[in-house]
Length: 386
Picture 1 (cartoon, rainbow, N blue to C red):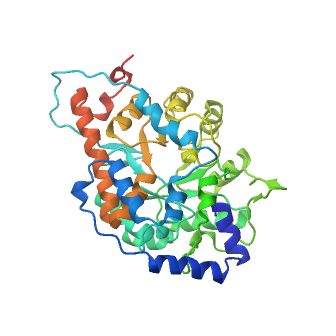
Picture 2: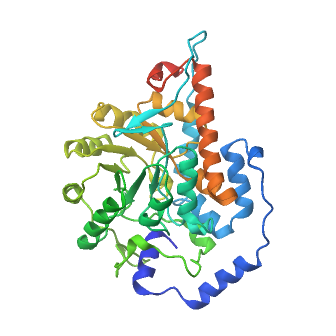
C-alpha cells in the first residue's frame, strides 16, 4: 500500500476488518526482540541491520524499498563513494565547529530529519519519539503530511524547531486549511513536495503486502474524500500540481516555503524566480521514478543555477559524515536524513533517532578535522580530489 492508497483508504473507509485482524495477529505473535546497546551501533549501517531484525518484514520493505529495480536508491549511495577527498594538514583546528544558520534559524549541525510517513508502523510512539530524538540531538525535524501524529501533538514534545512537509490536497480548501493549521501550530517552514505526482511501481513494497494496523491514522489528511491519483492496470491519473499552485501556496503562507524534489536546474531557476525560500534537491529517495541520477550528481547543476540566492538542501543516500562534507563541498547548505532516522526509531525509539543524528554529526566533525577544515564555511571544492 503506497501513500496515495493510504489517502484513498481514509476517504473510502475501505480498510477491511479481516486485513486489520491479520496484521494485529502478526504483531502479537512476533516475539519481542532483545534490546541492542546503542554503543554497539557504530555506524548508520549498523543501525539499519539491527532495525531490520526488529521490524516487521512488510514495514521494512515499505521503508527501505523504492521504485522498480531500485537503481536510483543504489546510485544515491554509490555516487557518494565515488567522490574522493583531499586533506590539508597542520591547519588551525581550534574551536572545531559544525554549527550553521539556515533561514535565520541557528542549527547545531547542517543535518535535518527528512520527512517520512508512518512512524507508528516503526515504533508505538511514532513521530512523538522522532521529535524527541531530534531534540536530543539538537536537530530540526521536518514532519510529513503522512505522519500518524498531528502537528499539534508533535509541537507539544518538540524542543527544537519543526518544519512541515506538504502534499497539496486536490481540494484546495483543505490544502489552505492545512497550511494555516501548521502555521498556527508553530511550524517554522513549509516544504512542498513537487516530485510526487504519482508513486512509482514499488514492487518490493507491494509484494510485501503492507497492512495498516487498527488505530493508526493520518490526522493531516482529515476531510479528504477522494484520492489525489488513480493508478490501475487500465488507468493512470496523476495528481494535478503546477507552478501556479506554488504561487498560490506562497500567497497562503506566512512562513518560508521551500520546494522539495528539484533535480533539474531549469526547475530551480523557475522556483527562485517565483521567490521560494529554498530548494531541496531530492529524488524522493528513489521512490517515485527509477533511473533518475543520484541527488549528489544533480546537486552541482542546481547550485550553479541558484547562484547563492536561496539555500539549497540535499537528501538521499547520506550515510557517513564524509557524505555530508561532499554535499557541502558541492554547494549544499544542509542535508536531510530520512531512512536512517526510521531505523534508529525502530531500534531504540527517541534515543535511537538521537543516536543516528549524533553518530553522523560526530563523523562530520571527525572528517572536518582530518581535512583541515575548522568551520563549515571552510568546506569548498578544494576538499575534493580531482
